Length: 416
Image (cartoon, rainbow, N blue to C red; front, side, top):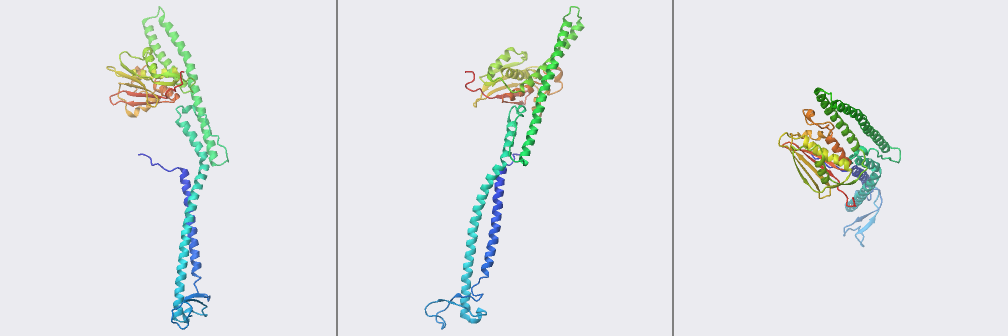
């Protein structure tokens, strides 16, 4: 289910400020209107003995002959006691005053509503600006976290820090906590890389000594057939351990920052690997469709990448009728793409992503006869990420995998 797109926190804060101002303005306008209406209702003409304007009907003996409207001061007491014609004039005056009061109230509400609307808009705009300044530190934290998470070499970007300055408030303490977490992660990743590299170096020496001693013992003229057979088995086990150590060293190296950014054509690398690699099995039908696919990076690591991907497709294949297809090209957006497709056992879709994990194989039965160390795809992913690219696996319905490697294209000035 696609998540619903929500408005930003800055927008919600601005709307909240504007809504509060609108509610406060409406409440103030309502109270003002009520008070004014009550005040006007107590100012009824003639109710307090003051003069008021009255309208008289012509023909009245008491009416002046020079006009219809005149001003009278009513006698003390109820106005109605002065006569029916005077009562009629008071009612008319009351109606005129009520109409004037209603018009005043309507004008007050209209103008007040316009003022409330203008103040609401201005308040929302000010709230937008204030919220932007208040949320700027959070935006810096988010940008740093996103930059680290989206980087292909995220494990080597832990040295970045926010270093937020400003008052010692909740946001600054959050930034310092985030910096502390990055520092601990950076130290952990670096310690892990150093451990793998140092342990691999320490293990290579005894393995090399063991291989030398076994070869000397097997090559002696007095060695029996049983000794030679045992020596060959030990050499095979020792060789597998050496490949494991070499893979760990290469994995540790590929997870470090690149220092070489030379021009490399993946098509040429595939040709070189096919001609020289021991991983190529003559029993597997290998077909190449190579176009120019230029990129930049460490040529040695990229050669290991191509060798691992093709070698993995060769090893994990069917016994009879196996095939491997390798293609390279440059896409329309300039990226270099390498695609390796092979036949092989059916891979469950839920197992595909786990194949990138170190020492991960599809089934345990392949461990005994596999010549690999279970690091090929892990090393390949580390090399691709170090070069700022992507690698993906797709299980074929008929068996086998489709491995797609995408690397940034080479710039035009490289190699000039």
